[in-house]
Image (cartoon, rainbow, N blue to C red; front, side, top):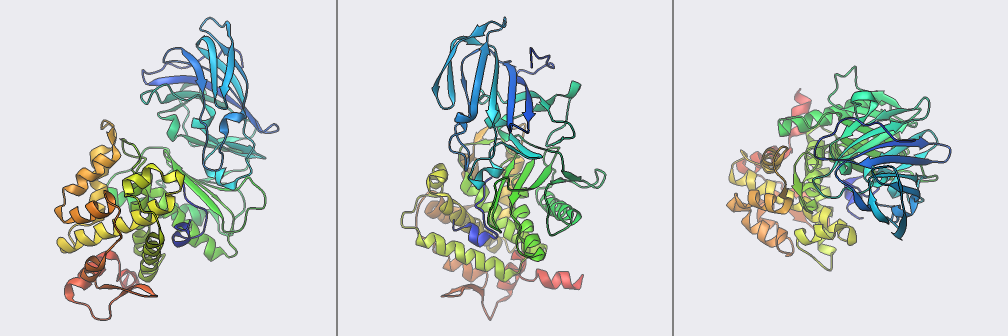
Length: 486
């Protein structure tokens, strides 16, 4: 999931010949070889369709920071199942129409880094001794949602290594879903997994102010925390990739991240001090590692970004408090800022509508409003159950019900069904998820002994009842005392 590029959550809110291939399954749509050329910063792709012939070759049109990916495609050569050449014409930047049925293809992709640094974690690039391969912008678009599997042979330059997949027979890599697959390649990459004992690997490139081992331990600690919450591991080949921007002169403190499939990608420019760099990395990991479970670990469709992004932001705050990385006051300050940002929005949409148009100017609302919704749901569930239920029950239920092999379900419908099963959440869902009303959280805050005082924002009240103390304790208010006692 993509993130704006600043150093903390509060700021975030402001913003070749014929190939021999292995056997395939019914869901597989393509078999191909990708050959990388670091000098030209390009990739040559050659392969064939498995799930029937096509009359056109279509490619992903854009990614964050890369608005015209199609123009990178060149030297397209198509053939039928006998190997005879099939003529074609370019009908748009990312579309090639064929004169007859296509069975096989070959083309080149220019994967020099584009000028916009935002693309570093979202689109394929190759530069120097490093590269990031996003399969959805290198391979032809699948013909249907049921056709996502691909068997690939990745031809690397001498001395290079690949991270983000495991080879099957004869050196091929099989990917269940090309839209959820990312591969990190490079010559000077440092890989850490403590002889396989850590639950998640770390592939690092570049020079950082902190040792690799500290970053690897941080990633493992956060993964274990979320595994404890969900009660189960995510998919295999879990990996965190930490890399410098391939673009030059990126300002200090800039970062971009995405969790694709089982791979967390963080492109970053160093902070001035080691402590700042570690704090920011911990924050990035808390948010992105959560996405290994939601949404990447469930079989849900559609645009329900408000839920998984808002919940990831809020759970990142709670986890930061639980792991003693941030103070409870920091958590309240971030929630205050989110509320202020939402209040300043002139045009409010329901969260469902905002998610549908997230990349058309609604991203700030999705993040800010989604996080407040998660906070309110947590307060209400804790209040009405005397601390026995929380927002964590919501996402555990969603994950348990819709993890594979569950059949695909539209995400908003699945989430609303769970929310509607808690009558106390009804007013919040009607007013702020389905509706677009301004937040009024006075009652929910009062139950937790929290006051909203201008201009300082959210603060814990000076006098608390026993019930308020219990609820605050569940939110993490006294966590620092527990850690001190240990």
